[in-house]
Length: 517
Image 1: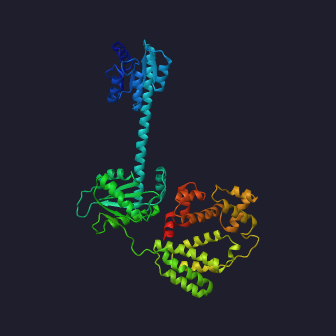
Image 2: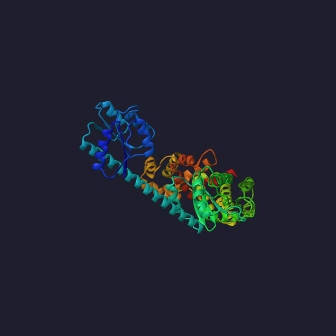
Image 3: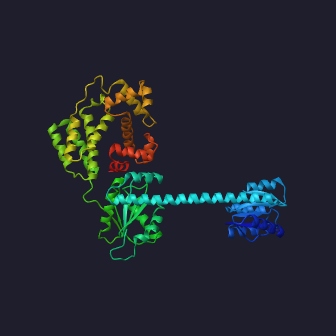
């Protein structure tokens, strides 16, 4: 059904138009006609017709002036101008105001039928388009809900679906820099009536105004997976989540409950740990309504190990290997190998090897790229899972002798020139073909040389160089993840995040946190 209003100060004209509409168009509801521009504006505002047939010459506010006001108010009623005026300026102004057609009096019945039919078709097409868009939007929302439910279920089951999460987060046009899990439930003394099934929708609507949020109810607990973005990290997430829950859940959603909050997780794969942590925090017997999970055991600061670095470095130069070995083992064995501590130890051992190697064998790096040596050290150190393995890695690398130059050595002029070019242009969009052209050999031959001389492919070497420079930028807290990625040749923040994690075994946030300590 289409609603139509006629605006004309001549009653006979209104009756004639009404007769033609009733005769030829059965699916139209005729609203009471009006005789002035002021009445037209009021009627359109109140009745919201689909079509207005408007005469220009009406007393007071004329038809064109009324249509102009309607457009200023963003009213989308279709307008057909019906007038005795034949002036081109009137026609031009009507078209500028978005009139759908312009008819002249006396009315030609056939022309009116054609014009009115065209406007009805245009409205029908718009309705169908809006219906399709609404249908697509609803389906998209349904699919997103299904995806969110699957992701939350995978977290609950202890096997977070990283692939599904990546697809969903790409759709949300965001980048993942870490998150936390929050468990919301009624207080043990039943002080407030909190029902997860009822509270879910208002809480989700309120929280999503401030951050990305996945929600799932399980038994008597409502779980919130909060993803705030790159502005929040482990140093101040507790303050952030406290303010968020107070503002969104309590003030806006009007829900009163007790919250258990997990520790900060940089990696999505660790959200199953967060799921259990928020439950443990929720069971905490403290009277506070906001309870944070505190990891068992004392956190191992990098600074504690750092204080021993200079002494060990000196002992490596002036002492005997047996003394050095004993000291290394003693230093490392003092620390438990919890996950955070192990990563701290790995980073410290990595730095110890590089600094001692420079002092023990200054000429070593004349025949080998220091960046490639560092990458090899980092890889092997990252595979160590015990203090004993880390101790062995230190001694193995420090006892490694400098390789003698030969025809296949990395000093090969082609390889050295290629490495130098990559080192100087790593921030550009480099390809094997670009570097080979600069060196003056075929891409296939350069690829073989690089693989033989360095045991790495072109892409792996370029990644090594970029990651090394990224680590230097991470030490400067003025740079965001996006800034760092773009400065080392990765315009896509998400892709840089994945490459860095795969290459170093740590996220950018985790490494930045270690440098802070």
